[in-house]
Amino acid sequence: MKKVIFALLLIGAVAIAVYWTQHRKLLAVQRNLDSAQKRVEQLQSTEKICRLENLALDLTQDIQAGKYADSLKLSTEFFDGVRNLIIQQRQASYSPVLESILQTRDTVTAGLAKGDSGVLASISNSSEQLRHIIAQRPSAK
Image 1 (cartoon, rainbow, N blue to C red):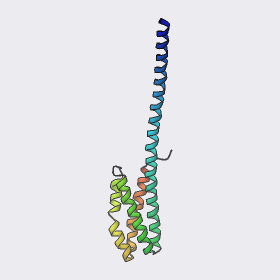
Image 2: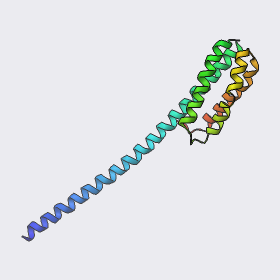
Image 3: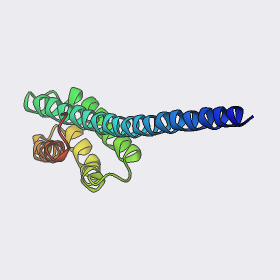
Image 4: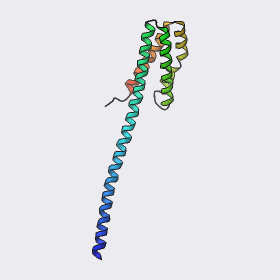
């Protein structure tokens, strides 16, 4: 009888040791997964900002080339992208910068409709602000 009780206690101790070891591994994997998910979200956000900067650069080229009809389409895409990113990243530290870019929308749109190349300064400034946000983001290491 003592041997049976001892065997059961030994089996219980082994089961607890195995459980505890696996539990610790599971917690470590969950921490790594959470960290990886946060990193993916950061990289996706950076990618969206880079796309916006590319749109701003394309817009700059079209304005310089005098393609105001094309510029109007690109400006709509650009400012819609800025607005969408503000909505998605409401808590981001760079949201105020995006909001200041979005505030130039009406002026830029009106200028492009008139064929005014003076809006180039505003778009260049927006591009520079986006570049600054990208520079502040963690690198893809």
